[in-house]
Length: 481
Image (cartoon, rainbow, N blue to C red; front, side):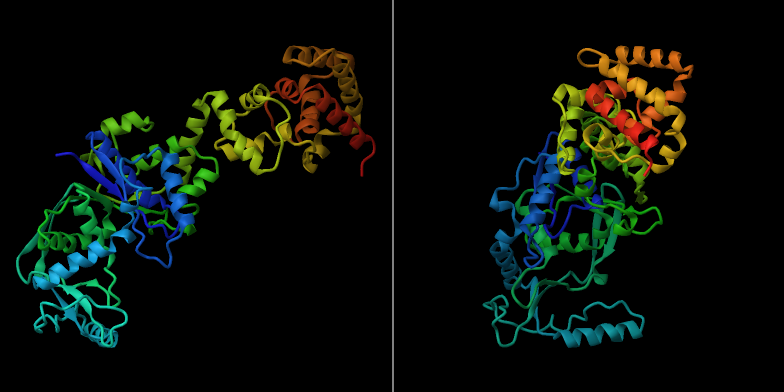
């Protein structure tokens, strides 16, 4: 049997961390078993589905490297294009008496629910309409009908539904405790749970991977598959992803969408690595390549308890991948983030690589790398007032002026070696230690008291910009605002 898994996002918003984790596990399982990974777009919520969300979701999956074997742009993999197939299957169940029309109004159902709550009973439908006779030629409901009805699935009244879950193990559901749920609304539109399992069996999906908040849907979907004459897929229900406070991960815990991390300068390798470890393990290993994840993955190593999202752990992983990245690649990846700030790059690719090389072991994300590089990239820098008060004092004006003059006298562009020679000359002339001159110069050139080595900074900034900033610092000292 060829393994076929699927990921079926709804294009009603951004791709959530918890959802993409389920998609990632489905992807890894398919690739581990040399199977196929399918992307289906569950877009039956026409009012909330948007092309913007769809484009964003597909871009996120491509960014993560979760390439699919079947799916968009093929229109056959959009659930909204399969509505007639869903309606045809519902009509088959209706004609075979495996489903029935329900004429109970919303007001009646609400009253029954409230009565059950008062009596502390589970609020399940009482099957009032199940015994009614109806014509085998009954059509599906239509929003234009004078008196409409819903279609309910006729659950078996006895027996058990067994779910041999690949993560949770065997689960047993008593059919008598499962109500006759609606599969077609009164306007003729099939509900998601019905459409989803039908699409899964039609698309020959062998394994459904999803969050354990769907466990209650599973026996219902299995019974619908049996009623339609299909063997349902295997199921793997993953424990939910929780926030640090133990509640379901949500926006109050910070960024929860893939695009937010993408736009904040995280790497797809870090995100994949982190999400894979969020509920799965392979010994004590923490860092995995994509090939290792595919090679090692299996549901038997998935945990049964909820995973807690740790933003600091993800940031640590991203820091690891940033440090390990080749400098030319890092320089290329930082360009869109520089452009987003509206800054021009004052040099060629070789210059940018040189600048990035001085900072890449300090930054944790591409956005932070751009922040750290701002003094290289911007024509005008802002000098921190506290740093200026501490280091740009009147007694240092002479040494800074001398440093600027000696640097300007160098023929051609400066190098770290030539910068060091100039520093040593000025230090000797004014009888200063390196720190006494380097810190004021650092503040003058970068705006703050922390930066890469001062010789490196000057070699990257270049002679002209360095001299101009040093002279500006002298003017600030001698003519304070």
